[in-house]
Amino acid sequence: MGKETPKSEELQKLRALIVDDEESILQLVAMALRYDGWEVETASTGADGLEKLRSYHPDVVVLDIMLPDIDGVQVLSRIRGEGYLTPVLFLTALDSVDDRVNGLTAGGDDYMVKPFSLEELIARLRALVRRSQLLRNQEPDPLLRLGDLVLNEDSYEVERSGEIIELTTTEFELLRYMMRNPRRVLSKAQILDRVWSYDFTGKPSVVELYISYLRKKVDGGRSPMIHTVRGAGYMIKAASGS
Image (cartoon, rainbow, N blue to C red; front, side):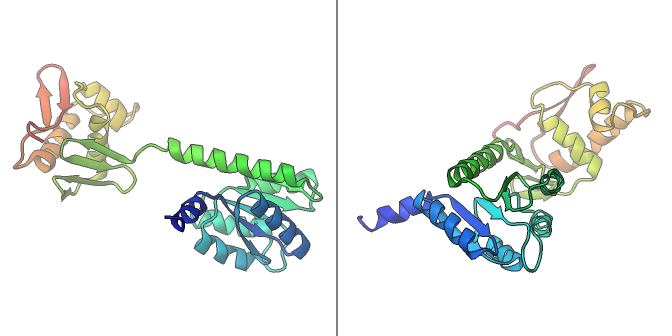
């Protein structure tokens, strides 16, 4: 048991990647962060920094702009281009307003100029990590579930009882709107407005047509989920027994 506790604690440490070609800065920041309880990885070139980012998956990156191979702004551009949302703090000797604007416009989250306060740097890094974690926690679940029907808003996949259902884009948007409003009667006008947009000039009959398409694919051979409320509109609810 005594050997497992340090491992458990270690997993909870914040992870930082420092990319700077000044060895003295690199070691100073790394030492300060480790003393503060962080796990730290370092790199002295942009290329090495990118490789470390991909393998180390830090919670935050401290990035110099003036690097010997790829400048920090280009490094950040590649980071964002590969889909990484890791917060990045620029730590650089470039202190003009234009430099700050360029760094933040490129997707940087914060900017500090050398010389700097270690205490302030650590405080800013912790604030960036907290903000990043808060945003991740607020991201909505991409899965809409209703009984045995599951719709993935990210991948545009739909399945019922584990069976994939192929939908056109319009059918998907119609189903998504209905699943966001379960057990609620939606009028043809409401559906036209939300699925076909407010400036759509088509007739309500198009809603009837697409409801029939959706019924064949979602309800075909199964307990019905899509219901017509005569004179009012349409409603989706979990099938009985699901």
